[in-house]
Image (tube, helix red, strand yellow):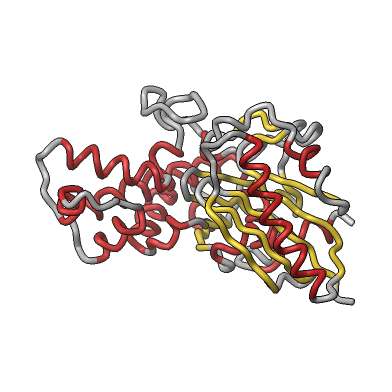
Length: 320
């Protein structure tokens, strides 16, 4: 009987569950929208329903389910399994998510921060394979981060280490959903890209193709802005250059702190390509110290959007 792990990647916009083989192959995947603004019980119900879909498929295929691995955003206490903070899930604070999920499943449950599971997916099966020291950013609705040192995740006593999206870059900057001001997340996430575009357009000094989208009341997204940047839109290019610089500042600083050479970038924003990566690399080189800067590599995730769910599923094998 083939052994599989069921993985869950819980994002602010979508959640993904998958049956994944021991060697990192996705056998079955289910995706649905995340009701992130709803009550905790509604979110729990959606998670359970999605996991049950994959569980039932796996059983129908006569697969051995070793366990369930969860990639959860924000701060979930590693000891208690209680949500301390999920910035994009305002009604989840204080919710005992792990104990509640155990009521629905008889398998062993393992969990890490969602950026940590993405890092583990890339470390074991993707762009980080063979590197025992690396740092990753997952850039979507928010920004997640994770740090691997000597082949081990940096967790901290409560499991909260690696919140790279909440590095303060400007103490007087925009308010972040975590309650702080000027976090990396408010400058470089998909939400920040859209907000920045709307701010500049509302000033009325620049008219570009992005202005036309707003005039037609069409939704602006980070991916749409990236496409317009590729076509040569000045404002879209300016925004992505800013985002790349903010990320480069963070990467250069982290390289100085951890002496890490490899940085992996994932999430929807990473699909922007060179318009994001070139200013990011240039800025990281400027900010890193001599002796470190020449060794820095910044790569896009190899596993793409599946990194998180593959890494989550791998928890059941590497913890056993």
